[in-house]
Length: 325
Image (cartoon, rainbow, N blue to C red; front, side):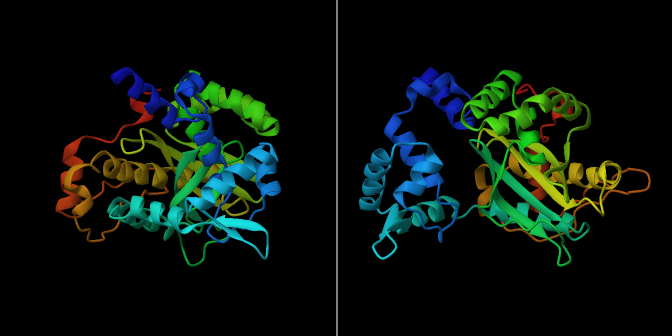
């Protein structure tokens, strides 16, 4: 029983790890593939559009959408002959997120950095070949990149995706890339040639940069963190205008801030169990990095909650040779 649960945990950790696929009931997997096609509550899709996105036969999609509609996960719109996300799916996601004050704490930390850099700072989690924004923050003068909660970005063309893939154990990351090559060949062609160099850079520096990969006008930097809640790596990432922040400036000015942010968010993730969710937060400023000499100022104790979080255990660091890599 324990071994089977462990296999299921590995499957949940990464869609690219195919070692546990025998434990997945195919119809359930396909149902979730259908639901993944709806990127927002306002998305409206017909069976043909869903079939094209999922790569499934239209007859199979028709049976799945009929069942999901009866369950309340989808709603059928007769006038448009399309479907949209249903009340049960919305209620399920809302109840899962209810009480997760961890997200509020993380959002405050993201905003502290966003107030100092004219970009979009995000906290993203993996979903097969994409990373999904769970939280984000941006300054009023942010330029170039405008993501929102629930936005999906490809792993093969973003700093966040490259950081996530590089953080995984090599064999797990290679399995993910192999699956990507089968299903989205162009994505595999972008990610495969870069992965070894990215792993080495991540191991040495603790972060990943991607310049002009997603867009010639956007440069990105990302820091992966181990999440006990999700049993996988999550990523904090920032997108900035390349005209303002070239690669050299990313390393010199942005990386110190993001690494310090990674320590703060990593501490929150490490201490997010127990009574953490019921605690209240009083906002304080995140420590900032001095751009001139790359030295960082230690984060002050902001309240009793965060002091307890820090005492729980130190945040995991890839440069500290985390055993999960």
